Image 1 (cartoon, rainbow over the protein chains, first blue to last red):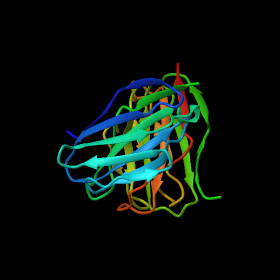
Image 2 (cartoon, one colour):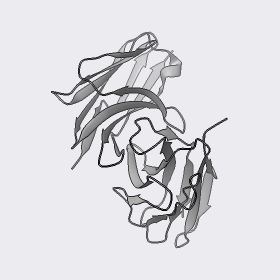
Image 3 (cartoon, one colour):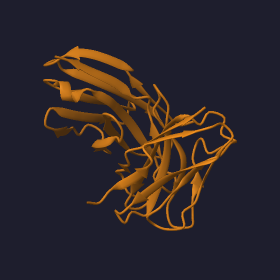
Length: 112
Length: 113
């Protein structure tokens, strides 16, 4: 059975701290790993990773994939209160069509 | 503006009633998806459709039904057979079935009492 596990499930830090969110997976037919940010309703796309060892960056956020060890991390530096959200990791277990398997999410709270 | 709309935002129903959630997209995307999200859990796939008049069951299809008569529309019916229907429902789409990024609608929160 395809499985994606995120840790920690919940994290509370102070503004300015750096955080690392983890995502491990076991899926058949791995095609890509995606990170989403969910603030109130619709998840919004952050990164898509397909190749091992190549870091994707967007401002203070960065992510990297290790296909040998089957995990990914999402780093956020110099956190701001606006980074408070649920961060979702999803793996595309391609089976003739895109089929995303989601982790439970990490609820990140940034206190001022 | 292109995007995905879901209506209504909040829906209340009594147990035993079927209810249909709307999902419309004007992105000209071929593939559409329905997910369910429960507190403390990730999204779980209910149904997906790659093209018009075709759809497949996801991981938790029991108690749900869908139709895909038009490219823009993918309504989800929550039937009385669904044992725990109260949840947040998200609709998503991708350009085609081989695309990577899914675009999500704002969601519908369904409460059944």
